Every structure is written in C-alpha cells, then in structure tokens.
Length: 386
Image (cartoon, rainbow, N blue to C red; front, side, top):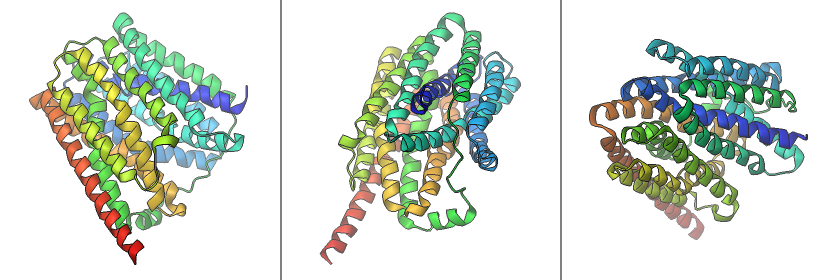
C-alpha cells in the first residue's frame, strides 16, 4: 500500500482515538460520580499537560530525526494508560491516568499533521485529501463509542481503545518516516511574533471566540446526559458535528476568500451565539444532540478562516511559529480556562446558565471580529487612496 493511503488509514484511526477520549472522557467521568467542577479540573489540568507534552515530544522527534518511531512509542503508552483510565473509578487514579493519556496521546496530533503535510507535498496531492479521513474517523468512532458505552459499559470502551491503538501501531509500523523539519519555537521567535499589534489583536479575537467553543466541547455530553439522553445520543451528536466538518473543509476552496477572513470569522461567531443560545433553552436531549449539526457553520468555518488570516498577516519565516501559537491558544490555553471556569459555573448554576454565558461570550467575539474588520478595511482603504 502506498504512503498516502497508509497515512489516510492512520489519520482515520488516530482521530478515532481522539473521538473516544475528548468527547467521552467528561461523560465517563460523570458516570463515575464526579461533579462538573471535578470534571473541569481533570480536563483543565490535562490542558496544562498537553502544552508541555507537545513541544517536548516534538523536540524528542527532532533529536532522534524520526516521527514514525516516536509515534510507535506514544501509541503503545497510550494503549496501556487508556485501558486503565477507562477501567478505573477512583478519583485519584482517574486523575493519574487521564494526565498520562494527555501526555502520550495528544502529542501525536502535531506529529501526524507534520507527516500529512510532508507526504501530501511529496505525492503531489492536497493536504485535505488526507486530513479528511481524520474527520471521518472522528465522526464514525464517536457514533460507535456511544453504542459501546450504552451496551457494554466503560470496560467495553477500554477494550475498544486498546484495539484501535494496536491497529494504529501496525499501520504506523508500515508508514514512511520523515524527520521534523519545522524550526522549534524559541523565546526570540515568540518576541518577534508577538511584537506585531495586528497579530496580538487577532490572537485576542481567537481567545475570546475559542473559550466558549471549548466549553461546549467539554460539557455538551454531560448536559445531554443530564437532560436524560443516552450515551448513544452523545455519540450521535458528535457524529453529526464531525461529519458536517468534512463538507466544509472539502469545499473551503469555494467559500474561503482572501481578505474576507475577519468577516467570515464574525459570521461563524454569530452562528456560535445562535447555537449556544438555543442550547440554553432546549429541554429535549434529542433536539440538543441534533442541534450540533450547526457545527457546519461554526468551527470549520472559524478555524479555516483563522489559519488563512494568520498566514496573511505573519511573515513567511514566522508561519511555523504562528501555527504553533494558534494551536496552543485554541486547543490548549482556552481549553484550560474553559474546563476550570466551565466546570465551576456548571456546578454552581447548571447547564442552562453555562450555555447562556458562552452564548454571550460568542456574541462579544462576533462584535470584536466586526470591529477589527471595519478598522483594518478603513486603514487599507486610506492606504489605497494614498
């Protein structure tokens, strides 16, 4: 089997593992009797671990000049820690193995993306033709995991997680290797990167908009269960969200226009507001699950436009740094705040208050994006007339 097809298979399997871990960890922890604030503590602390682990394993990959061998080690460690995580009930033990899984599983993502870019470039094919299989794996496994949890319980998830890890190990064993070529992020590079005011304002926009999105990702499964929904319904909700992303990413060449990124981000913010505001008033778990189809107009639109805008304002030599900072901000820093604050808010006031709060935050993000768009359009207009 050729390299692109092997990598497509690996993307499918790895993102299937993420679908078992990210959406269902909060649900699993809730099933073990943990409160929303305890769940938020575990997931927020996992964000700190991720921020440390991803650069660390990237440096290890740099030093050893290999991605594939690092992936093999991480997959084996993930299989062991994932099994014990989903087969435990003690709060202390859950914290320990959750942190270990964050340490081993999450760093696979940037290493996989590096392989995706390298292999697609070498084969003369689009990056999206490989990465789409990751979204497909995420959606399919989210659906399957819901049924496994409903029919076989948490032990079924533990066995399924190990099985997918081992299959991923076999596939990655046969994949081509590639050394990491991106320059490491240094303090000097960060100083230059953050010295641009336009870049700083953009990152503020990303932070404001991403915190409510990450709160939803963390607590939507818990909220569906609180309203009386089954684990299968949680899986269906994430399946709908993931499948809708495939459509948007595949058609990004058609709708994503240069120079219009900020207005597109603002439009996605408007749909984030609508999605979360409606969620606050829904009492039927099925309606809440089906509402996740609005993902089609939120995350993939927001993230695609954000990456393109970042590349338009950052010099080419800082793009690798910019991509790293964007990923850490969206998936790391905002996730930490979303988990800690979201868990405390949910615990104190309930799911409705949580969703009203994040809808307000999304509205603020939408307004901030519009303001930046109008300011920069005016400045560009003045420069053109001159």
